[in-house]
Amino acid sequence: MKKIISIVGARPNFIKIAPVAKAFKKFRKDIKHKICHTGQHFDQRMSEVFFDQLKMPRPDFNLGIGGGSHAEQTARIMLELEKVLAEERPDLVIVPGDVNSTLAAALVASKMGIPIAHVEAGLRSFDKSMPEEINRIVTDVVSDYLFVSEHSGMRNLRDEGMGESKIHFVGNTMIDSLEANYELIEACTITKEMGLDPSGYIVGTFHRPSNVDEPEALKDLMASLSRLAKERKLIFPVHPRTRKNIERYGLDSQIPKGLIITEPLGYIEFLSLVRYAELVITDSGGIQEETTYMGVQCITVRKNTERPVTIDVGTNHLVGIQMEKVERTALDILGGTTKPGRIPELWDGKASKRIADIVMEGLGLS
Ligand code: UD1
Ligand code: UDP
Image (cartoon, protein in one colour):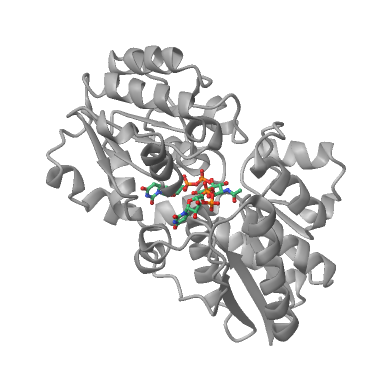
């Protein structure tokens, strides 16, 4: 019997690993798949709700790390995870995405000589001021399996000289979750409950430090959202980082009527809102992909994206961080200037199955 441990910590990790855990169930006679939660995200609405809604097995281990500076958070995960891995001695560790939990797990496993599979390898923003870019580069360097979600990832890994035998174009496991839950998402009644006209409202989400950590940037963002909320109702589920800063800078007193602020939403509710929205404005990585899959117009408030397929093939508009430009593009889209999109190659709901098959072969089990 071989043992695999998937390490998750932050909201997008749960969504990327739920279908992978399901795919390994098929091989349960040969493989024991366990989940270790670092505790990087810990609120019920940032963590447990995803285990519930995605019907994901409860974590076998929870390191209870929480927040902190990059060094504190990464170091605490490393210290606690090393103990778990020393005890469990898995044959493979799986790490998804680009958060600090991903980096910490990859570093610990590599020093312990445990093979690593990186789900969502090869994405690059080419912007090292983003912590995620450092996390991606380091994780890819120490990984043995590089599971890639879009063609740019294949190019980047080859350009960086990664061994061809490690690189596998498998598709996107975040889209596996979306595809598996699509009926529930379409049937969800949240738009009705919130009194929204289908295709007549905007959804906004933001959590990048470049948009929400500096008072001026956050003030500009909130002012723009407030102006757009006069054109259409704008639903704004607020990430904990953003909420802390809105409170810290006293921006919570000037919120106009059309701007509907909520707690972070459950997966099904959130994606149902996105599915029927006229426009999504975000700086999230995953939401750029989900809007492309669903053909929903998306404005990305960032200078770059590590997911260029959402621009080249999908419905994403990368506009930078100047809010006048964001507002202008939003008004154009609301006025009917939309971008047609297609679903990128291999975003077909089967990426996790491909991953499980490749791992089985790699472990000599098929
Ligand atoms: C992290 C990831 C980012 C990812 C995002 C997904 C890193 C460096 N950043 O950013 O790449 O896009 O998750 O959402 O790993 N907090 C709570 N409750 C929670 C979660 C967080 O109060 O459930 C607080 C933390 O204590 C901290 C702040 O929110 O004060 C930020 O959390 P943290 O995990 O450090 O970074 P994120 O901004 O969430
Ligand atoms: N999401 C959610 N509820 C919300 C906001 C986002 O379920 O209120 C989901 C979203 O659909 C996507 C994931 O969270 O699947 C993206 O996570 P996040 O934006 O936090 O991280 P990123 O992708 O930017 O790393």
